[in-house]
Image (cartoon, rainbow, N blue to C red):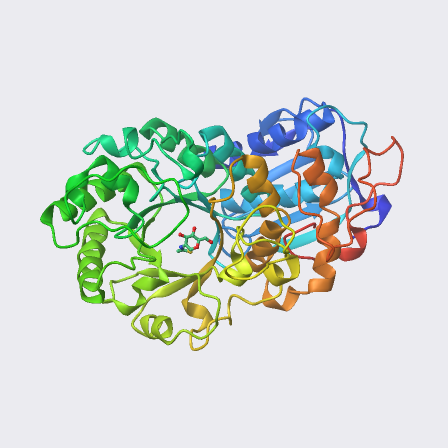
Length: 507
Ligand code: TNX
């Protein structure tokens, strides 16, 4: 790779050719939309079967190509750039790699001079983990649909494939439920700091789900139970232990609330809510929280979990819960999300022996709401300060003692929003840690290399700036002194030529 003679140059008349398959054509249209603003080119999409020149860009489905539906191959030669994959998901990740191979100016929303050169060579690529996620807490502060879609685009850029939405908490209930309509209208009308809150209608939620699906991202909805339910109680006091609806809560304490686990009405409520959310959600997972139910006695908690696990099973979904579920009875297929800060958790290891799988979100590694340093204006510090090296320098596959890699479904970076009030704040906490977590999810452990990573990460900065993302300029990363402006026509054009083969960030 890197021989200038072999490079592919995106010319003004380039056509994107694609296998005649609806999902593949959608990826080709997505690629055209990515490239049109910065290049100013028309970039028509045509079938590979159509007559005409064979050059340009081709996205090809080939059932025999690659290793798994998310894998792809990218071949760059002087007259053709080809992405080949067994499924549309792989084509989509190949497109994200192509985007990284193009000059950063491609991220601008107005035409730039180019030239649009991709170094020649072949990349064969596939993810390490099946579950690569990010979480947005829309309960502590509400984020309108358009802002969630912007976050979806950020996570798509780094080949993450799940968006976990923390839809309910003490400070707000954010999803319309037809059978319990006051959850949205009353439970949604609050947030941390006393703002107006808000909630997603079913159409809003579906818009998020469909937009995410168009980026090969599965939405994982979370209804947090039995704690973190104060907002639900403001709407339906009969679900609480004293039967009285409390006033809304706009503080940031945790662990004080719970539904009445002894009441049959609670199970009718849980059944209705989970059924409606499951029906709206095409993805396989339903997250039911389970964290910090400090006011529920252990025996009551265990009995509640047993019933809720059965209710989720009836929806046909796979249950996900925070790792506090680990002590309770096993349910087939259940997934525990680990947010502890120590690799040693005998209860989780035991749950894994009984058949649970895990998603890794260690608080001191993967939590995007932890401050980078003591000076960080936003965030919390209960799990410590998490700058980029801490976020990057660990191995999800071998992190938990007595938990084999086969039990690790993947990892997720959660962004809790007690202190995050805008999408700009969210971006500041995500960048540059989100790409660090994404690389751990995608690349083989043999490719983890902090020193190489921080250089590739530095090269991403102009892309973020072009996309309007204000990021944390961590002193651990050798950022370019000045963010380069779009190159002069005819200037040398290379895409990280010295650094291939390299993992998901900054190919
Ligand atoms: C713990 S992590 C929580 C959340 C908070 C977060 C803040 C987890 C399952 N529960 O309720 O928002 O810490 O960092």
